[in-house]
Image (cartoon, rainbow, N blue to C red; front, side):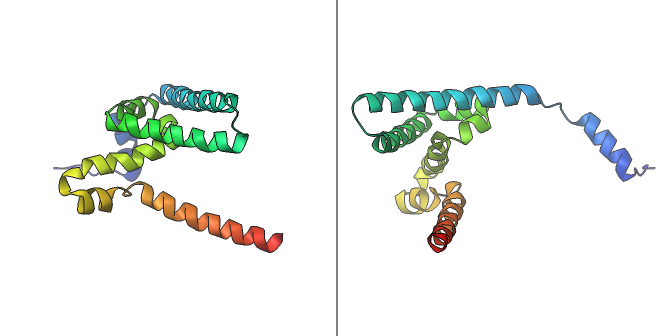
Length: 147
């Protein structure tokens, strides 16, 4: 005969069964990996500023370099390992955004360039782009009205 558990008993039982998550280690690794990515970006920007570029141009070029690095590391199957170690620290910078576009493109390449790469490339990044564009339009309208 099966014994029925109350919700509270089940909750306690399931918490005992669940593996313990090393939260502090994950937080530390996200901080270190994200910090390393940002440090690399800062080094690139400082190098570009040293060549005589103005701050705005150096910032745009740095973003392009970081997107290229993220896409390249995804293409050679290294960025997934960085993401496994760094978690959110690897997902949040622009390199993580590049990874979120290149990964589905690589995965669905076998389905063809139109229905595979073209249709599925923005599978993960698409919602981010849509809501980012909508938010920028709303903020732009508010800024226009206030100013």
